[in-house]
Length: 138
Length: 301
Image (cartoon, rainbow over all chains, first blue to last red; front, top):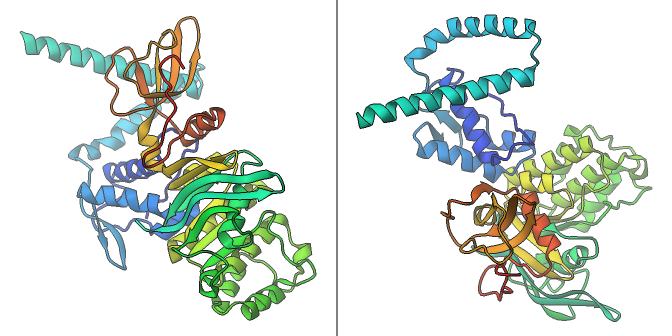
């Protein structure tokens, strides 16, 4: 069973945050087919949010074929989003941890790390797209 | 969608002043609605009219299609928690529950005792000796033990500390999930409103300024950021609710008629807080369902 967390400062709508968290759990294998999602009432009460918001998130996940509601029982995972790449996550994570050790040793703080990762990601993605664009023309 | 509460040109006069006038709004069955507005806007007056504690001087108020105060059946379907959650201070919690069971034809004693037990509220404690948070929780339990279809709450958490406030909202959302109760609660806490409400009513100076589904309202409003544009030169962005300018940049909050394609504008979503504050700051703006005469703004306004 997963537990939802809300970011009160996020501009993202509450139901989108719930959807994103379920998908993330599906991607990393924390949720697998057959697993049950927290009950609507429990989510509404623990997060102090409108039960309709939870229903809306679950309905959207159902439309996408990821979960199914069983009347009177609950909502269950139908399909995983984890890909074969999941097996490499462990090794990549160890690399990342080693890299983070170096980063912190160099004196960067958490915000600077996040900024560095985000700007690098953006730059790499843009280069990729640029290259693909040129190859498309050539 | 049927209405739990509907008012038409509702008015209530206090001496020579109108506490509420020309107020038309609705709250659909099954919604959790927020009643928002500045102090003195008429929120408490509206709630007292809805529960039948006040009589309208003008217009109509209907709860599940009937005028409140006329029928005993209707009164049983409405729960009300007044501002500052008043309780008889010399009664113990157990005595308050007993009083409730004697005064109401429909009363679920198990529900009351079960909820109070879960909250760890001592039944033998006098109401006057409870903490603010406990008092609010007891008032909520007393209001829902008669299993109302509509629950009216007048600033239930205004005086509570953040933890007690959260516990109260958790209890309230649990009740909505269990019983499907329609809720209308007045609040100044827009963060709470954003998380808990799917229907919004903004009142200002005695009448309704914004009425509608939160999702639809958020979908209709956008923040636009673009290069400095002179007032009156925005075209095709919809109704401008708020504008601010620096020497390089213009920021607008607009109610759009559709997608904005103009490349000069960087378009982003608004929060409910942005939206409410923009309307409260602009007494001429309104977002109401149906044919409403919106003042001609946006162009040179």
